[in-house]
Image (cartoon, rainbow, N blue to C red; front, side, top):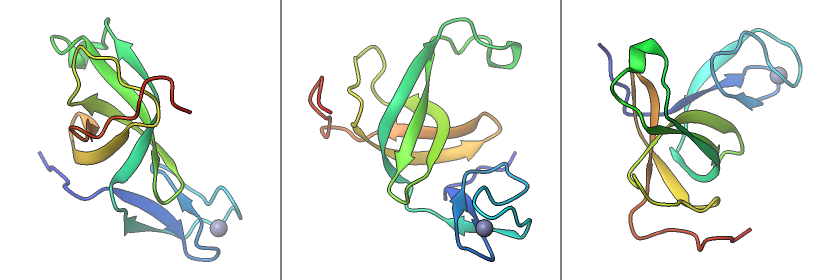
Length: 120
Ligand SMILES: [Zn+2]
C-alpha cells in the first residue's frame, strides 16, 4: 500500500483553478487538463460528523470522525479526523494533513491550538 505524506489537489492547466480530486474536469472552465499540485496541508475544520456504524471495510474502527477541512488554498477536502477523540472540536479549529493511504485522507487536530467553542 502506498502512503502519501503530501496532500495534493488538481490544478487546471488553463485557468489555474484548484479542485479536490477525484475530478475529471475543471469546475471553473470545464477543461480536462488537470495536474496534481502539492498543498500546504494546513486548514481549518469546516464541519465534521462522527461515524458510529461504518461501512464494512472500516468495521472495527468506529466510532471515527469524518471532517470537511477548508484548506488555506481555498478548497475543501473530506477526510478522517484524528487527534481529539472523545472531545468536542470547535469548527474553525486548525487541522493539518497527516497522511493519505488505503483508508483515504487523514487530517489531525493541531494540539493546543483549538478554536474556542462557538467561535465563528
Ligand atoms: Zn479551468
